[in-house]
Image (cartoon, rainbow, N blue to C red; front, top):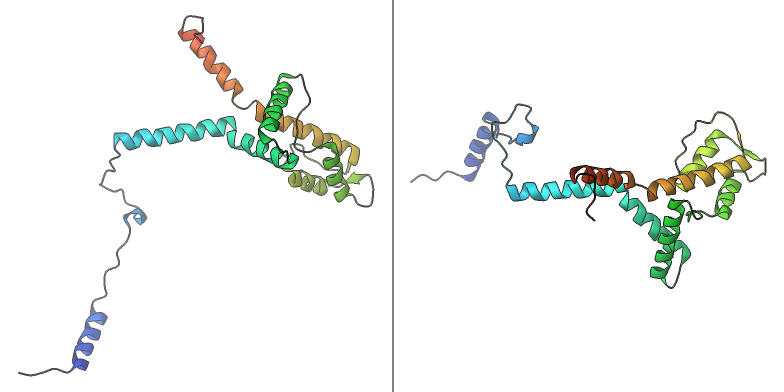
Length: 197
């Protein structure tokens, strides 16, 4: 019996590697051609995915995550020892504001807005550049809807910031209300003009 030494096997393996490269497996998701395979989704999974999509749409349209973030921020900023009572009062104030009977329970009080303006105008010039105004809005997390070309007096900016945060809060508190009113009208039409509450 002839014994071959180990180096011979290594040479043979090296020659084989050079001659025939190993195939590379490619994920089918990277291939552009249409797949002949059909993905079958069970009815149970379709129902779950449909429920998730409806839930996400409901939360997005009614801006629920933004509302919760606002409420939590107000609780933290207040530092109340009774957060549940504070939240109840805050929600009541919000509903009164939405109905047009109360002041807006905005996140930033007048003193906060004045402090932000002061930080952009430390020399008390009495005005800010359009770039400074944009940065002030970004700092406060507010949306600037107007296009600014000239410098803005600080008192005008203060009123603009104040009204913008009130408008955004009103928009947050009324998100989805029109949708609910529309669905109530649809129900009334289906029931022959009367609602069944």
